[in-house]
Length: 354
Image 1: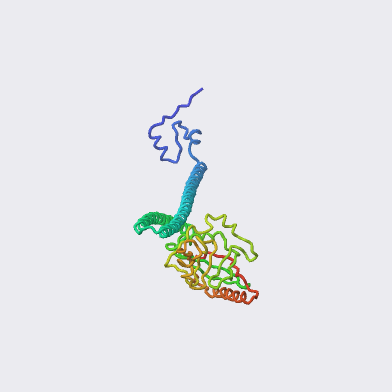
Image 2 (image 1 turned 90 degrees about the vertical axis):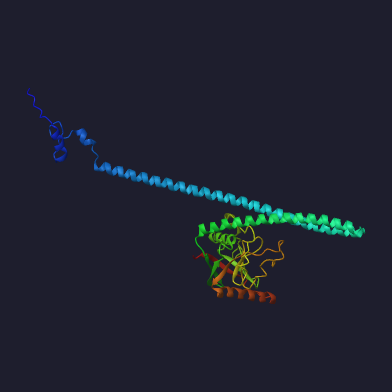
């Protein structure tokens, strides 16, 4: 057997292999071995690598987004818990304040009774003055305690107002908040626009009402025609079906405290919450009720110096409100004369328009 003579492979051959179109390998046959060709990345493998990288990137983005949503949810749960604790503390302080007021009243009565008894027993003037001084000292301490409680309540109210202002902006966007009231008056469709008070003035009340609108509490409810100075709402439909069960899904069904700002009084065409501390029912003032619904105007309540919360005003469609008020006046005359009358106007919906 004659063996072929292998051609020597020089250093120049290596250089020619990289610079020419001919594949050269030291074997001398001009072809790359199979294991070398298989080790080179193909176009298909490159596409697979890119696709894998994209999938990994999407998964990473999804993980980051889930972590952000979880963190945001945890923060909201924490804030709700803190607000619930403040609400509980506020109720406790209110109960303590009422107990303090009752104690003050009792001491007033006791003071008058003691002085009457002393006078009836013809005690000398010096003893009477001494007893009066002791009573005044006790009264002074009670007043100081009550003032301290009032200061604490004001601080809690400011804290709640700040939180509700921030929540309203976060959930409902920038101000002003405009709402379209859609009503049906004697089977005729009509509407009017309400602008809510600035959050800087009435944050607690505006936040509560926007939450009610968002929960659709007032859809297919009614305005009553029972009074001449207001149009009063009820959480029931024209057939008498109560809708107050929707309040169970809300964190708050009424105000925590009767918020009031003297720069936003109960003028004609303004909206206010009824009752103490206020809500969920509200009314539209069809007269200037600044005094009637302002501080000291609701003498039937225990804290007479408080006022109904005024939180919005009609800015467009006053003629619609006037038509509804006309039905109230007609109903009032019909009741006096013993005739039948229209007792309500249907509030079909309230829509956020800004």
